[in-house]
Amino acid sequence: MSSTTVLFSPTSSSLFLTKPSPVAKGRTAAAAAVRCSSGPSLSVGHEEEGEREGVAMVGRRRTLTSAAAAVCGAPMLGFAGLGLAATQGLLAGRIPGLSEPDENGWRTYRRPDDKSGGHGVGWSPIIPYSFKVPDGWDEVPVSIADLGGTEIDLRFANPKEGRLFVIVAPVRRFADDLDDATIEKIGNPEKVITAFGPEVTGENVEGKVLSTATAEHSGRTYYQFELEPPHVFITATAAGNRLYLFSVTANGLQWKRHYKDLKQIAESFRVV
Image (tube, rainbow, N blue to C red; front, top):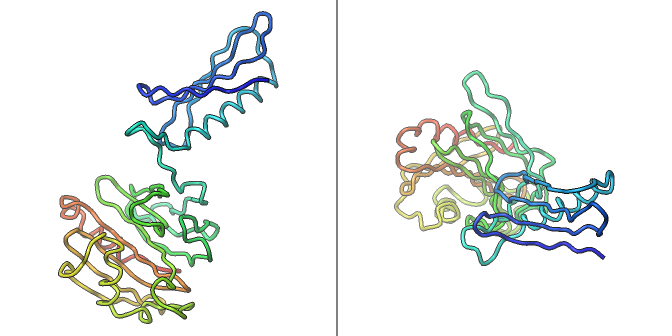
């Protein structure tokens, strides 16, 4: 009966899975070396001596590759800086939702209808939302261990311009009997930013709200806030049994250089 041995090399951040094949004339053990990375693919290299086993060897390779993927997906405890965070990614139904750039170079993201809730918010359907970003912004996988909380549904970023995330939270966390919620039913702008601003910034927002505005699109009301510090735009609305918080933020230099675009991103948020 054969077995598979897993070896970890901390110097090369690699996992080595070795599976001995039956002893036979002119044939030695086959080994597969798998390097784990933060990307979506695995680089697998095989070194074999002697006669190959045709279809049987293909099946053996697939077994080793599957085992390696399972190991690489698990956190590596005990090795600082080498652990791989479990991410929402494809496991929670992450599907690209970006359009092609328009004539101004902006793309529209729309949450796909068949994207699962994932990340702790999938107990009921989520009404899709959309927003616009300049070309160059891309989706960032959401970690299960995200410090922003279990209700972050999406992250986007551009390393030169800033980042954004969407919180989709059950309204019942904040109020009863609001299955058909509106942001007005939850509270006025001051109440909403005082209660939910800390969900975005991680700290009390008293004295940090620079501006407040109210906008209406297709009969739905949106509260729009600018805070400092930290530099952040927050757009808040509600639909169905969900509260939506859309946050756009950047560091000081990015905020100064891309303020107009960051504000346009924040004001483009819609629940559709």
